Length: 301
Ligand SMILES: Cc1cc2nc3c(=O)[nH]c(=O)nc-3n(C[C@H](O)[C@H](O)[C@H](O)COP(=O)(O)O)c2cc1C
Image (cartoon, rainbow, N blue to C red; front, side, top):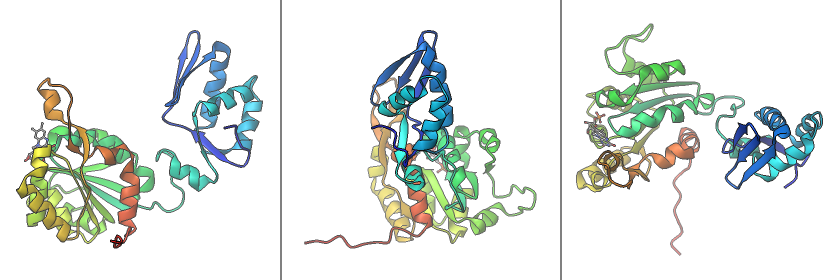
C-alpha cells in the first residue's frame, strides 16, 4: 500500500533492521527484504524519522531530501515496516504502547502486587511500558516474590518497590494505607495460588493482601500457576470467592510451563499471564479503571 499523504505513520516495532557490511536486511513479519549498501544509511534516517507519528506528507517530504529516499520509503511501507492510521488516535490505538499518551494519563496511580509465582521475573518490561499511561506506578512484593524481582531495576525506571508493611520512606509512614488510599487501580499480577487464598480470606498478612483489602480502588487479579493447581477445587473456590467480592479475575492464558523446562523436558504449555503480558495489559487496565465494560446479558435466543 503506497504512503498516503493524509494518513499517519509510525515505525512498526515488530520490524528489525540489520545493518551489515554488504547492505541492510529488513526483517518484518511478512518478509526479509535485502537492501543495497548505499540504501542502509537511508533506512537508518527514515526509521529515525518515523520513530514518532508523522503524516504521510511529512514522511514523504523527509524522504525526498535523501537520495533514493522516496523509493526506499515505499519499499519499507510495502514490507510492513510502518504502522498506518487514518487519524493520530487510530494510529496510537494500533501501535506499540511505547508511544507517549497525550493528555491526562488514563490510569492514574497504579499499584502492582507481585507474588511468588515465577512470572514475577518477567514483569518489569510490561510494567515499564505502562508508565506513559499512568500518573504513578508502585510495586509491592510478597516475601516469596523477592527472589524473582530486582528492586534496583524497577527503581532505575522510577518505580518504587515496597516489600514490608513497616518500611517507612520519606513522608510515607504506613505504606499499605498510603498505597491503598492513593491507588486508582490495584493489579495483582502474577497472582500465586497462595496469594489468591489470602485474598479470599482477607488475610492482611502480607503487603499485597493488605493493600488489596485496604483499597477502595478496583482490583484486578491475574492468576499464574500450573494447570493442575488451577483446576484444584480449593483454588477454584478461592477464585469464586474473590470474584463474588468484586475482584476482576483475568482468565489464565496458556504460556510456557517453567517447571517442565527446569526438568529438561520438552517445552509444554501451562497456565499463566502470557496473554496479558503480550499486549492486552494496557487495554485491560484502562477498561477496568474506567469502570468498563458494564455487564451485559448475552442474548439466549
Ligand atoms: C521456582 C518457583 C516457581 C513457582 N511458581 C509458582 C507459580 O507460578 N504459581 C504459584 O501459584 N506458585 C508458584 N510457586 C510457589 C509459590 O512461590 C509458593 O506457593 C509461595 O508460598 C507463594 O507465596 P506468595 O503468594 O506469598 O507470594 C513457585 C515456587 C518456586 C520455588
